[in-house]
Length: 114
Length: 115
Image (cartoon, rainbow over all chains, first blue to last red; front, side, top):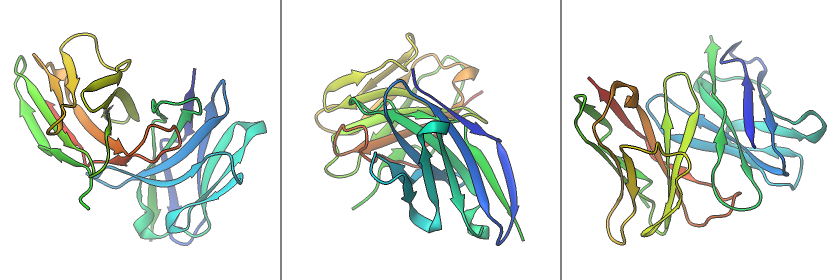
């Protein structure tokens, strides 16, 4: 069975500081991994995805994530936070053997202080 | 190219009534997925449909919930005899294919409140 754990339901950073949102996954088969962002009262938007190419994946808005198989992690980072990054972020995993029963984590709400 | 359209955006129903949530996928997308988001929780998969077929409904409650994606028209998620616990945001997503690495595009959701 697959699962996703996001450590920290709330993260607060100062503007210009490093953003680090943690995600650990569990999967019996090599997974696909995703990070989505949700702004208030909006749907989810894909930030980036890992599909077995490079382990360091670059996404939109300056975000990137690194797939570490040994740690079963896929943490999301951004070198310098901007006020507009305040949102909820979801890590997700899906199986490679077809289908689209993507499993989402509980989400991490990012607050950015001026 | 319009995105995934969900309506209504907000829906209020009294206990025991029926709720019908609509989702029009992006143009060219024939795969639709419904998710439910409870407060302070992530999205929970409910059902995956292609045109006229339910492919995976393993996340759907066994009673009161049903989904369809007819040949013509939007996908419909129907909840009969709603209860307070059905209050949540329901998101629809669509994709052009079924590969597990295929990006899905999400609608803005329908927020159901049962009073």
